[in-house]
Each structure stands twice: as structure tokens, then as C-alpha cells.
Length: 152
Image 1 (tube, rainbow, N blue to C red):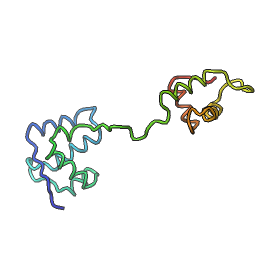
Image 2 (tube, helix red, strand yellow):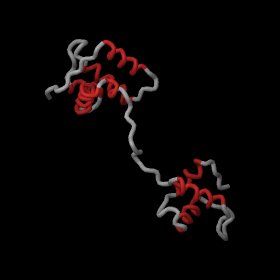
Image 3 (cartoon, rainbow, N blue to C red):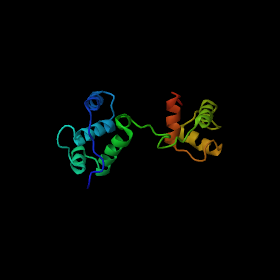
Image 4 (cartoon, rainbow, N blue to C red):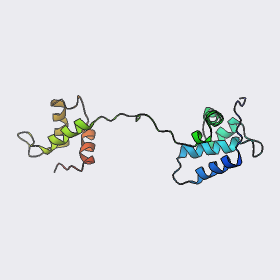
């Protein structure tokens, strides 16, 4: 593969890369990007090829290429920062309103014939009362545990 982007770190950039790698709160992904930049650095001698750097860092060749491209186009600060996602990967099943209704139901009187609420019974009533179209017992249990609500 032909190298399209060449990395040449200045002394200040090289120092910043090492400081980022040594910091305790640096994520694994950012540390990996730092290693990629150091392996591709042409100012410190003969740089590795993208394939060699990918093998050494245990990433794909496209990851190495994207890191070099981001450094050339967007700069070192962009490469060394952690990217936050706009929305979570998995949307929560229970929102604030549902949570309030579940808690109110759990704190209320259990139905006739029962001395107390169980998670299964709560789950069944949540679906019957159309608080949620469908919900699992584990979701109900986690919702109650989050608020330290004990059914006993």
C-alpha cells in the first residue's frame, strides 16, 4: 500500500504525545493512536510502513491510515482527544416518566391476594397498565435497585 499521508512530529508534538501516553487517565484508544504516530514519525529516523505499524499495534491498516490522515488534516490535538458520541449506543428502555410510574406502583399496595410486590408481579402489572409496551424483569429490577428500593 502506498503511503498517502506522512507523519513528521516536531519536538513539541513528540513531547505532547509522550505526555499523553504517560497520563493515567488516557484511554486505551488514545494510547494506541499515540503509538501509531510514534511508529510513523519520519523525523525520528526511518518510519514503519502502515502494515508494520498495524501489526505492531494490533489494529487494522485502515486505522493506521486514518490516524495518519487525521494528524495531517486536523492536527495533533484532534488525534489525541477522546471523541464523545452524540447519543449512546443503546437507548435506555426506561425513561424518567416510566421510572416514576414504576416506583409509584412498587410503593403502592400490592393487588388482592398478594402480601407484597415481587419483580415478576410488577413486570406483569407494568405491561397491563401500559406503562411500557413490554419490559423484562431484569429492567424492572435494575430500575428499583438504582433507587435503592427494596420490595421486602
